[in-house]
Image (cartoon, rainbow, N blue to C red; front, side, top):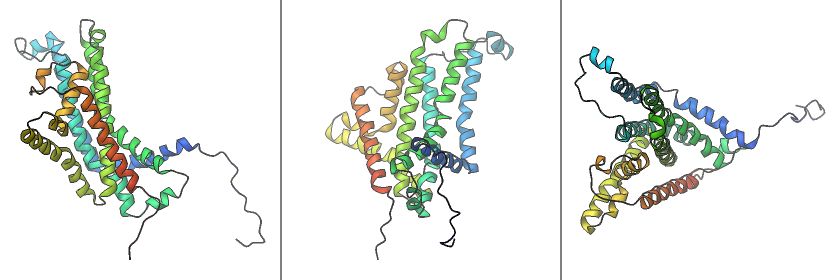
Amino acid sequence: MSIYKHSYRAYTGRLTPAWYRIFVLARYGFAEVWSSKITVALFTFSLLPSVLFLVGIYLANNPLARALIGMQNAKLAAIDARFFFVILQIHCWLAMVLSAWIAPRLISFDLADNALPILLSRPVSRLGYVSGKFIALLSSLSAVTWVPCLLLFCYQSYSSALPWAGQNLQIAVGLFAGAMIWIAFLSMLGLAISSWVKWRMVATGVIFAAMFIPAGVGAIVSGVLRTKWGILLNLPFTMSVLWQRLLGAPPSIIGLRIVIPTAPIVMSLLLAALICGAMLNARIRAREVVRG
């Protein structure tokens, strides 16, 4: 445009609020996550257990249906906290597999294509960038964790001949709280690792390693030092204990007799989340240093 032409005017329309801009990143992150057919296949596979549990709830509350298929004398699982504990465990571990696949797609692609400085040159802060990716991952994992679990809880409340929901409200609260804690941790871990590992397949493997290698280290520490506190590094065990207590399931369902207070478990999860936050803070920068 020539300098003598003054037809250009600055934009004077309505500006998007700063808090809403992170949802633009979340929308594009969500589209990137679901652009893969493997993601759709994993999502479908993660919902298959809900169908089986739905059938189990239906049979447990319908004697006529059991009689029609010849199961009138069969012993079905009681629909209680133990039953929903198993549901929560299965869905949460399937969510870990889904997270290991989709989390590296959110940040590692931006780093590999050197797109991060361009994105952060827009009116979006580093916190806003991470929050947008976090929302996209959290919403995707919610669809395979607490959403189907609470739908099964509602179906059991509807199917039961007794006033079941009011007497088991702790189960619903525990399902939501336990699933949210788990997927929030998975989201932080997945984003932190994908911000440091540019290769997506390698990042997927590192996420699995970050889950299970500390468990082996914790078992070694407990055996060598003869202490129970090494078990805090065993994330599968500590999360199972936390889910059991949130749902009010019997302690015997865990399978181990080691008693760990709830406060150290929560503190260990918070410490791991802080480490993930520090990793993101160190990696998400609006500039890239090139060493010659």
